[in-house]
Image (cartoon, rainbow, N blue to C red; front, side, top):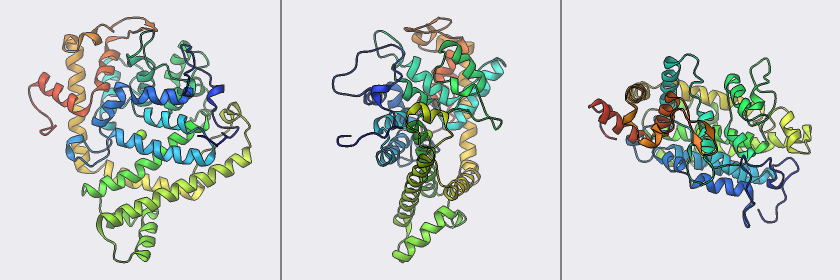
Length: 403
Ligand code: MG
């Protein structure tokens, strides 16, 4: 970021609230660059390449995976951060880590795992993917001699924990007073946390939304589950389709689709930049602690927020609930349920390293937990194809034929 000064409301690595286990600074990298590098080198990051975003891995080689999705979020986030003089490295670190806790098979896997934990023990904290992403970087990665996890800075961890139930926040607060979960304890009457994370975290969150809204249209159309005619109902899409066809009347097929999506992405990026600048001017925060006390400042304009919401609604109705997606979803949920039952019934089916974590105590080097949590961690870490193969090994029949 040579030549560019950070805004006073940006997260400055020199003012970081630090790491859980103090470390000497690196000679050439800031603490947030170092976080980003640790994430890129982690095992969980490499697994993202074989984890579903919407379409299962074997359904096509060109669809987004969690990895390519995370890279797109990082690109959008960095680009906006640079313009707003926010910390690009921190946005990138959060973006690359935001989905590390996702189970195999996307949201279907997460819902099934949550239900398994709750059925096993109604008092269970259940499964929340944001919390699991934090668990991955705080506990589950085993790369360093002195501690478990990646020992990331407070600011990156704060960005990773986008949502958290109040109940789980209280539990985490007991272990880490004033830590990243503490803002979820006090909530407004609408159930929103009273305090915000830094602007880089707010930005990574919005970049996530911009990225999946755009790439799910792309994947949806290329898979044949969505048609361009259906998308005429979506204002954000149809207006840029009209605009594109005015300029290139003969444009058809993929080039038309890509150009419309490109214009949609640009419009959303410039909208966020404009609306956030206005919000920043109005609130005039002079520090990160000030940002944390204010309402969210990284935002769409009112108009764009409505358009984005209607696009999301369209994708929910027409893509995420498409019969073909739902059918795969049900099979995926069965795989997760069967795996949970199998490992709980016979933990020896898991690798020894996981069994060793039963009932240990949380110390820097141990991640001990109740058996059901260890099993959930093991399943959550699996890639789609590994989960399917394990299922076949344990159940004796294949649910997905081509993984
Ligand atoms: Mg995401």
